[in-house]
Image (tube, rainbow, N blue to C red; front, side, top):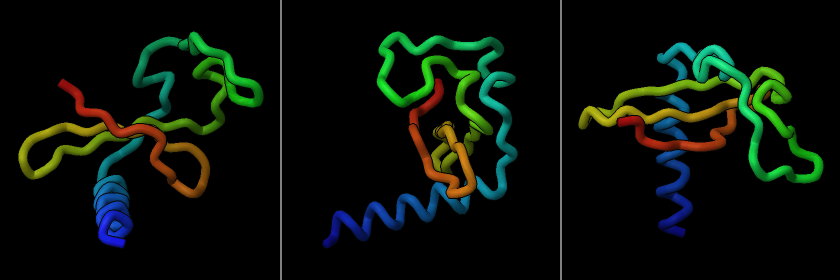
Length: 84
């Protein structure tokens, strides 16, 4: 139960931070198309196959910059990784 509470708080914090930061199309952030090395049935094989994929980022209060990918209307986070 406690783990679920922490997950909800983290997701809420990411969502709140993402509303203030402007997202950019993935291809413009990365600069070129990307072919995923492992092809999975039913999933896009390259970056440009994702419709409306955006890369967004925010900086935490301890100066760590986090980036995440979002796609679709639900604004679900796909990946969160620190940028150095």
